[in-house]
Image (cartoon, rainbow, N blue to C red):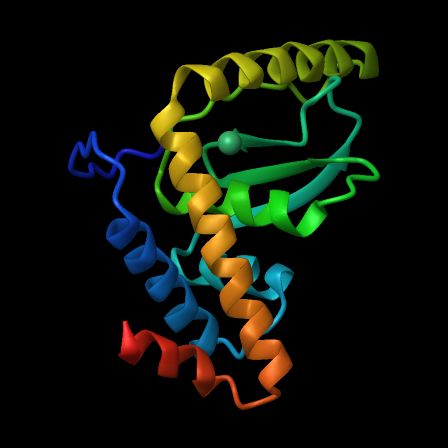
Length: 173
Ligand SMILES: [Zn+2]
């Protein structure tokens, strides 16, 4: 596991905790002039000096997104032709921000065949479903984070104000 940074074990649902995370992400977004969700992901990536790649793949039935952790980067995989791409991306970003443990990274050798990779991806999709069900708290945090962040970005983009609007909300919080 590369996400070695510890965080306090908090077993109760806390809107304040999630709101604080959204505030922090919005502050970073403002620093990087990020106004779209993809730009926000890139900003968070730059801030933590650890790449977050966004990829598309055919995931298993009912699986919208996945996280894959590698030694040097995190990958958010979104199901192809997802109707709610933005929300799912925000949800997966939430998991990363909160450092929720995902399925352990599979070491894919460079010579791996396409069939082997496809097999691993399907296994991973299955694993992720199990993890989602197993950690209700992590799912709640990621969903709440996604809802709050999307609302914040929507308000910001409809205002047409400067990026500082993101900070303005932060100051109110
Ligand atoms: Zn999730």
